[in-house]
Length: 394
Image (cartoon, rainbow, N blue to C red; front, side, top):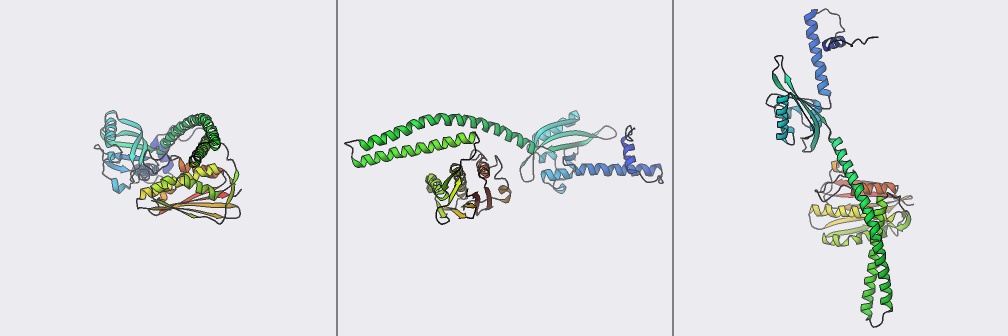
């Protein structure tokens, strides 16, 4: 069976679609009606396309811009009507060269070309430009079709970063494994030194106590280093959490003590509002310590960025029948609603280049999820931020 549209011209196809009424207007009326319906169809296609579709005159000034372009770049037609198309590009000169190439060759194309959203953000597009000609084969302008590929480009960049991080993880795991051996030797030497000091004769008691304290500190610090290398190895191998019982209050205080030099330097007060007595959890203390270090470090940074003298970090705990809730609040810069939606996204950071990787909160969120918990954030710009963590008791 032959398709009715098989060998018909475009005009005949449109005629079949639109001319369902009886032919009582004559051939001229029918032709006008067909032209009108064709224009309506083309206008509908152009306006409802999700791609940017524009028409520019011979000088590169916009004479048409579709709804898809408005949505992708954030401009309304009234704002950019009559303006040069190059004004929408991140690099107007590069776009102008592309436009000239289209004039010379009849068409031009570019991939991952950066436009600027009304808000100033980059919007990457695959561009196709083509000459428009009249019935006398004279150029009358240029039509451009631009497809937004920002999300695709972002995904490609994320995959490159992930591959790089995977390689760094393998290297870090190897380094951590190699470090463990000398750490074991240092730990044994410090233990032996402590025993020798305790049995030594002819040493003043105060000197002996000082030496014993030094050896004890060495042992404690090697234990800390071995704990960190174990964390690196565990992270690289994506191991499951190791659960044991501990007091979350004690863990938080130890974490704060670890960051105490930086807290004092930045003039930050720590306020504890803990539930009464010890709060015992059965979870992974090392992974939770990593979460608290990250949250406290971010809080310190936010208070420093605000730059209004002394700041405050408040640590709160509460207890329900089946879970513990920990809140870390700061008096720092706070975050907008738009930023809050993205903070747990991999590689998203508001810190300047070289200051942040966009990994901290993403990793923290993953840790809490592995521990069967939940992590939330609420913040007001200029007033501070609170992170809430809910963890099962066992």
